[in-house]
Image (cartoon, rainbow, N blue to C red; front, side, top):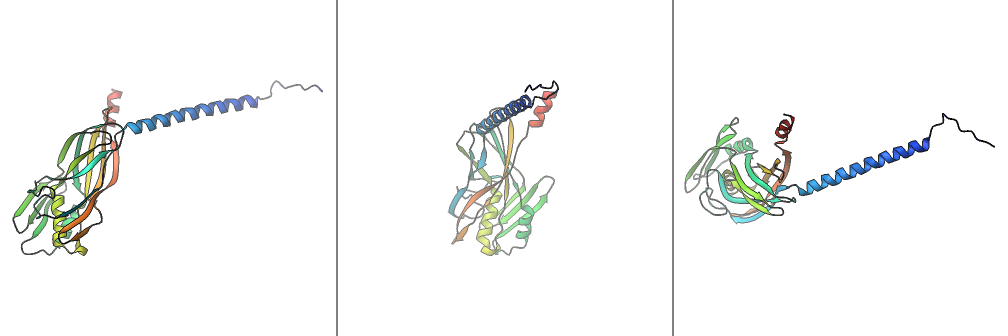
Length: 250
């Protein structure tokens, strides 16, 4: 029997081979892209606070927890650690704090019944300037911290696998001390901070990360507080990306 192939017959084998070859190329390109992306991620700084556990006798409310010296109006000398979990150095570290539950703390303090020699108030909240006053009295003195705002501080760099210690704001310690020393354990409300850290990577890209900083579960007995400062991730973004894109278009 003689089989005559039609000139108009379609070569499905050739088409299948072409499709398979095309898909193989796509898979190879995707694999290379994922590998490069993973490599870049490994080489990026990863900046995050670590848990800091502590157990201490709380000092008088105008004194620093670590040094027992009088608190500054801006930053205390009590610190929390911030690590670089990435593969390259982070440069030009800047950080600051926002008082997240400011209004809730003010309302709580306004209804607090204190002793004769103790008083603490949050006043003059300015939402536009994001500032407030903190006035407090203890058995030693009266202090006024006026126009408290988001103060900034800096560190030079964080090497891969290493840490820096960043300062906590003074008002944070004052409020915590008052809450534990002058409240029943069922009437404690604690301040929560939003920590913002910005830094440059080795390619001079600028990043900003945000974390909530607060006190974890605690034990307070006979003037001694045992607890931890813990963090909760909020966001991360590249903050000079748009500027760089505009420069490339011009």
